[in-house]
Figure 1 (cartoon, rainbow, N blue to C red):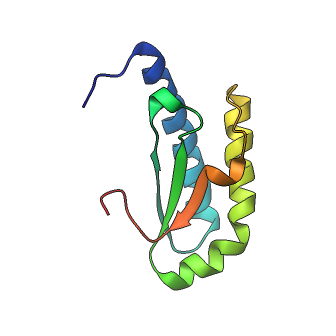
Figure 2 (cartoon, helix red, strand yellow):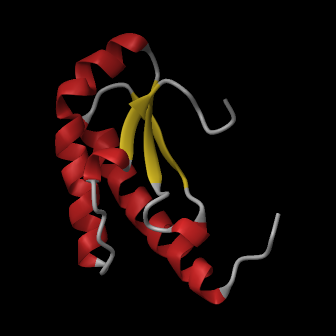
Figure 3 (tube, rainbow, N blue to C red):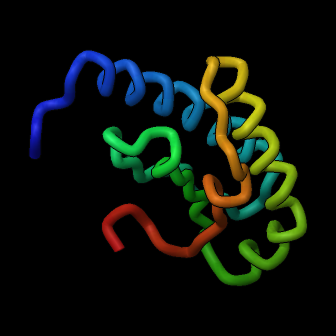
Length: 102
């Protein structure tokens, strides 16, 4: 894996901070939410950023689906507070049953 530049390290720290904060909130508010993980290509940041909320089973996932837009807005607002604009917030957060290794 290629070493990250100083700018990319700052981007990674920003995303980690926001992902940790959202994960903490989601675990408290959404039953069955296991973890939050993300994928990003730093040379295409912020357009390539996508956060995943992983759920333990299909029932928990379906029960949480109506709140997806609320969590997309929270991600967008958190990024905006840090000076990063997400052009289409719906593309940057999704609910899934898959883990980071899947």
